[in-house]
Amino acid sequence: MKRILALAMLALLYSNPLLAVEEENISTFMQSNIDLATTILRDKKIQKIEKSEKLFVIFDSIFDYTLMAQLAIGGKQWAALPPSKQIEFTKLFEQKLKVSYMEKLDLYTDEKIVIKNLEKIKDTRIHLTTHLMKNSEVYEIIYKFYKDKNNSWMIYDVDILGVSIIQTYRTQFADILAKDSFEKLLEKLKQPDEATPKKQ
Amino acid sequence: MRLILACLLSLSLLSSAEYMGATSYSSDDFEAEFSSKTDENLFDPLSGYNEIMTSFNDKFYEYLLRPTAQGYAYVVPQMARNGVANFFENIFYPIRLVNNLLQLKFHNSWEETERFVLNSTMGILGFRDVAGEELGIKAHDEDLGQTLGHYGVGSGFHVVLPLFGPSNVRDIAGLAGDMWLNPINYIKARDANLLDSSEEALAVTALYTVNKTSLHVKEYDNFKKDAIELYPFLRNFYESRRNKLISE
Image 1 (cartoon, chains in turn green, red):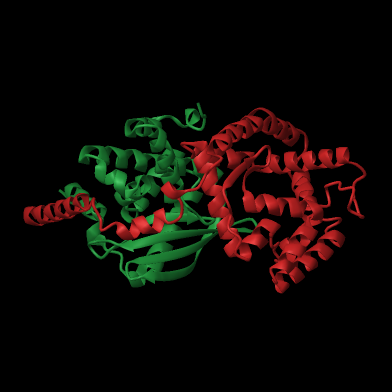
Image 2: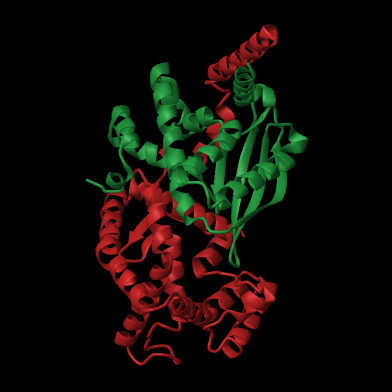
């Protein structure tokens, strides 16, 4: 019984709209997330796969993958897709983001991340600026939040050194779709990494 | 107990259903945010040439630069390579100074000068970045492309240069100007030359490039893995990054 209850609670936790992140506590909420993530990252006892699984539990509750996928492919293209394709694309895109993140784990040594600034761009947008410190160098990472239907703040994009992740994919998808079909794009998203950077 | 459980489950189902249903957003806002930057109306007249040059540069990196850098890294310990990188950064001081001054960033120009003096002396010809490590005085990287951008010159279209990699019209103009200030170039018309000939300049530039590459092979390879299409990936990265640097 206890286990079932625990599971139910877990399910509840995952269904993020109930765990609404309020505007005034975005900073503290993100700080605790970052601290938690850093602890996981520094834990030498757990394997890479397990590590990323633990990290993705955190990410899944604050990243709006569906919106990210929609923005990456562009509104017009998204609207033209049947729902089944939208879901397939979203899944693949989420997978791509996660694989890309997992690969970055190898580069992690003992960087520290601190929150620098929280700026409300407009009613429904907040930018949270963080600094990642590596040796003596500082890298700026901005998390972009929007207020969703349930008044919860969710991340829809991340700027790393001034480069938007969504924009990066958006230009690539636009380039692929200018020459090829949507099916081809899905195929390219599925491909293992080593085959992808090559141009025909 | 059952009741609570049922409640919990139905609640979570409800909310996740709501979540799934929220696929179409009032997305005009978002569309404006992203499509204003590049996308369909992107002016890229050289895209055909650029794509070919990107894959040429990529092959050059894969088959020549990376193996060379890795061999070099095998022979030269990391500490020495960091030292060499510091040495080069230090002698690029004229480029940074002039461009900080051109942008009227006097405080940064002063810090650059402090760095140059301290690192050249206490840091033994710049091999150690004493100013940065001990005193926390950071370099302020500026180049002529950034200076032009600072004064509102648009980037122009994207151009991929052989070996140099991604650039654009504005930054190529900047690059030409910066060459004049670059101490490891040999320019006959310039009165003061550190090096005696173009051959020497080429050799030193090669050393600089191999050394720098050897320190970043892992990062670059990892970064490149993210690309689905290399050319638009690098183009977007370059242009966004430059805009960010100009705004700073």
